[in-house]
Image 1 (cartoon, helix red, strand yellow):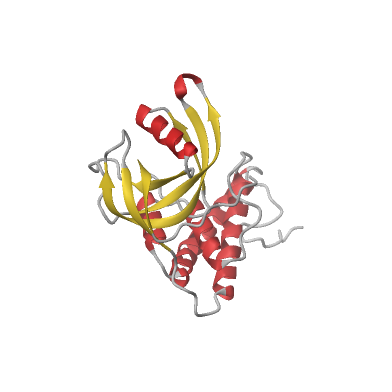
Image 2 (tube, one colour):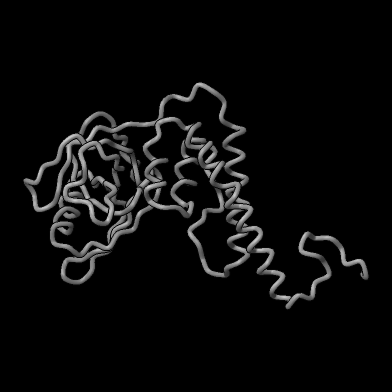
Length: 234
């Protein structure tokens, strides 16, 4: 992508796409567009600033989503036209917002939203960010040891603590409600701390499963015990 991503600040009226997804800034979100109202929404976005809001909704919630709900603006990076006006689009999260008001003048929902970001960081988060980075890599390594399938885990992680916290939160296996709780935070340190507490048991769990999986391949015949001690007869 050659064009720079827009910076969103203040208050703005944008199309809203309610989805059961917690979209974080920097997160890639592919979507298949097939409903007529969202076909119209994407066409209008492409003719304008290529931006719409993704607001999290639970399965049986009413419409529109509650006022005040946190969402994230999505920027359309690419589109693939399909038959009957359907399309696949690739988007990326830009900035979080609070929904102030909704409008239904168009076939699709629109919202007046106010954008927000994390509070300025007044302390060095390098050590905490490194702990999250290392523990996340441990988790990914163990998961990959158990599966030959391709995954969405990046090989490189951001150095910036805020960007790191968003990326790791978007990739962790947890409920969308848990992800929303992390997205609503405006304290980068608190988000990193919560991720650290979630990652430590996750890393240990996946490493144990990977070790058991590796041992199972030998049908119990191994030169090392389950804790890695050498076989006394070797």
